[in-house]
Length: 245
Image 1 (spheres, rainbow, N blue to C red):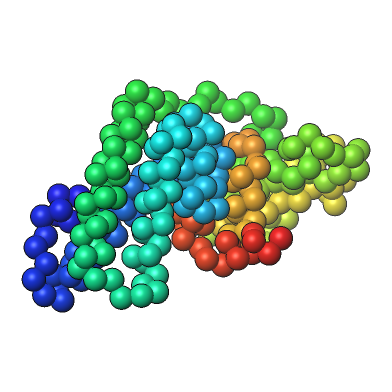
Image 2: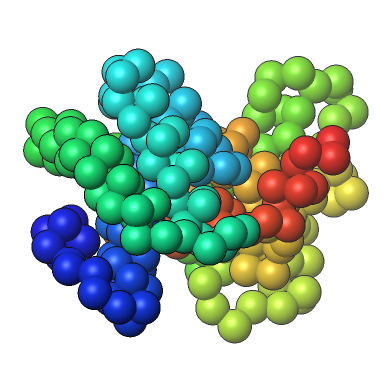
């Protein structure tokens, strides 16, 4: 933020530099919020504004900090989309009015991270873990009606897995058959979705409602969920899809 606050705008080059520095500051804060949400296993939002609401619900920030975060989102969107030409006065007003409150939010986030060191979860002992390990799966989630507890006796078993390697359809078939054998159910009652190849809309659904069943490496999981959440948040196509439903 110091760079944005110290820039002296004397020409168009400096004006462009200021715009970039302000945008970068705001985007970095939103990225940090997304990482905290992913690390804490909180509800995964599909929009940047949703980050503020998720953190408020998870008691990471209070109402006043949530409002600061929402102002940051709006300012960031104006800077990113360039619907109109921004003047020196516009940018300096953001530096003067938005960045100081953004610093308060950053201090709150840093304090939260410092006081809530995230330890790896205890080992997951779901019976399917052995199957996932045998098939060299990195991550496995249980989602759908059965994971939500609102299912019929004939409801399918829906799994989403991340192979994290050069997998193909045969890997999905073999895993499906072994899971069905483990569950002692017909193979057509088990569905396996490979997150390596899935659309963002499916991945978002899994992250939002899915229950983690297997994790080969906690560090890998955190990094993958962070990257994926940022990709979801930056996906205008996904936001349009969700709005249309």
